[in-house]
Image 1: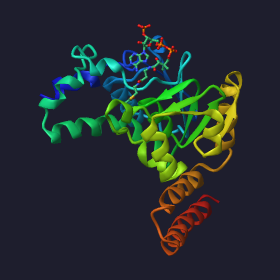
Image 2: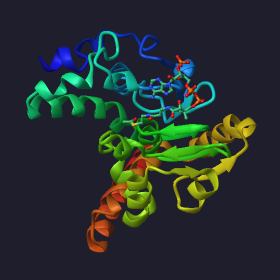
Image 3: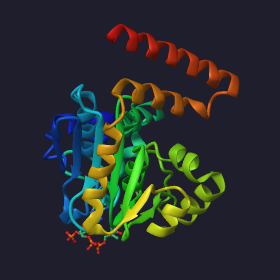
Image 4: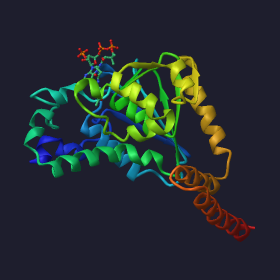
Length: 269
Ligand code: ACO
């Protein structure tokens, strides 16, 4: 029942059919949301394809860029999901009331897999965001480690306005980036956050013109690739764990990582 209602066939959909483009060039993988005529609206097939990209990511990849084709980064979930007809082959939320909670939560968990891998220590993910990044689009940008934005960017956590909660992994990174009070303000008003505010509150690392966005992301990727791969992975692991540890625990974790690093460096020489 759960499979039929919420897109059980999504796994069979190709990356292209899921509205994505995917290219790997050496150490850099680029994922492009590629349904500009629908403002890169996302479906269960999109999230399933994202998860598959993560599962199959070549080992040499160190940088993953997520960007959007056309005028918007992403207008969020495909609103046809809320119509009785739904998205062809993927069902509709109107049938969700029939699901038991366990099945429904499992389906959401599957969707979340499309976002979670972007935080892996072995990679740095960069969202290149322009135009609208609404709902699931905002959460996809939040799933990335860094956000470089065009000056026309408009972030919006629309879910509460639609009677929903943000459930595509976005609430924790939002709170981590801007703090609980600002996250409450942004989510519970469902207002737009423009480029200048995004930069000021720490949502965006850099604001550039739309014409400069691709180059700005390339420059950041080159900077990130200039450091040692294994040291970068270990350092990201340390930084990601820092908030959840005491100073004592964190310094202990630093010792463990450094001992492994120095042993590896001497083993190589
Ligand atoms: N789902 C499905 N189709 C969409 C979506 C969407 N989320 N957003 C836009 N489209 C479609 C429109 O229906 C339209 O299709 P049509 O040409 O067949 O009529 C086409 O994309 C272009 O949309 P416009 O509204 O004309 O584009 P514009 O650039 O003027 O506006 C904007 C862009 C602001 C993003 C607007 O489309 C919009 O507000 N979309 C809905 C955003 C939304 O509420 N998303 C859900 C958030 S909650 C969540 O993600 C869980």
